[in-house]
Length: 193
Image (cartoon, rainbow, N blue to C red; front, side):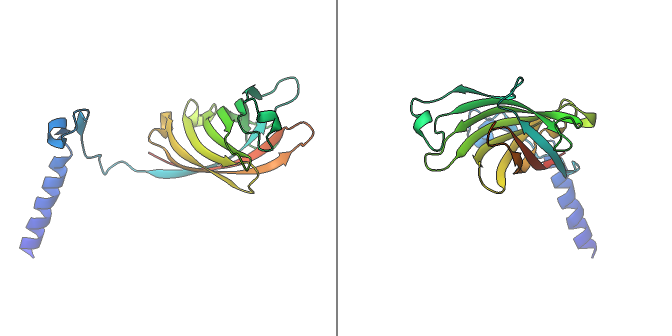
């Protein structure tokens, strides 16, 4: 029993010392690697689930999503292939655009599907309320617009969401086919420290 305890303590000591020993680039053989270190096991990763509503306003006196360019064949394409849209959409706590504003969805959508309405998205959720004010969550990837549920990856963040990862589930809450305006429900599952 004493040998087992001694071995366990020795292993624990070796592992705790490894935290402070950087691995230099010459040890790795990669000239561009400056150092590598073991990240403390004391950091606690948690998952937060947010739900908010994104108001995409393309028509009216104050549009929040605007067409900035399109390919020569975009107007003939049933999938809008080649269309690029910039957005700065409000994020609110309920589907009512006048409910509490918690942030903005800012980014670019590019129609990238030849055969289906699919967008390449580069978007940030920028929080403007409460303890998350000033923090961001970065979404980058594929969005199949007319799917019942659209899943998009979270690739990072800033502020309280540094090193964030996770996913976003988007559902169309309402869409006005005459104006093109829409309200999306976003369920955000983000792992962060």
